[in-house]
Image (tube, rainbow, N blue to C red; front, side, top):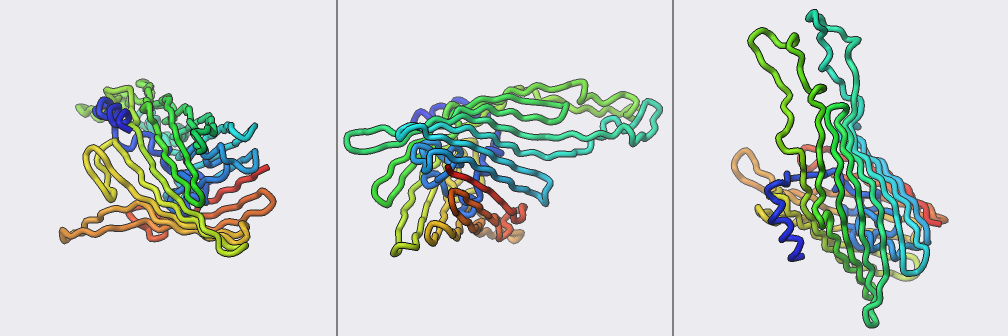
Length: 353
């Protein structure tokens, strides 16, 4: 962890806040129904996202997962897909793809022709989308009489803004998981090497023709002076406990702490150098077939117009059904409409075989 903060102190000046934030949305309605507390309890291919070391505990040996969610009344769409395979009792691999995009954006840059006429035939559409492709490897190692799971993600990031700009980036995540009885503990280090996006811009597409501008006026679409964007490390610590009640009922509770280092955020513990954002989730299961979930996250201090302030939390709920290897999960997130975003419906399906 000391090395992580050393890297952060060097790269901080070049790192914008919330860089590659689409990679923080999450994976799987199960986890999102529990407030995103899943860094030590993810059980299917979604584990590659939450903590790749959990892939070493995958049961059964193969798992595929898909998720779809829409935000801002369907304007933005988020899709996640993963496949994981455990060839032996000590090794697991996975491949993941993520897309977060806004499609069919109206491009009006060519609306006015050279004669000053509005020509709606010149209208076109473009998409802005962020992609991530990750390959994961997990191993189970023996230390004395204890078992430790470790894992890593190597990911490629591609970001595209129509014909106007594009970026490529590369980064590495590492994680570890330890189980002791009914307790699970884990740590996830995202972008431990920092993830650097290198942007290219199409100056010609951004240029505004002179005939569009009234005489004497100047309008420009300026290109940013920096072509690189640095994503600083994010650390997640998690602990969970699973308790059974008779043969049919069980209860799982997980707590997590997200440590971010990219500047001051509106979270529970907020400083210029380090922020701490807690998550808490619970899941009640019947015969491991029917699951009810709830969680809280996104703890913020809200300021009123009168100058006073209060804390708010984002509540989430979910339900899931599992049978013959199939799992269908649904989550309703932000049901309290905390902040500027209203609630979101999240669906995911997974199959273990």
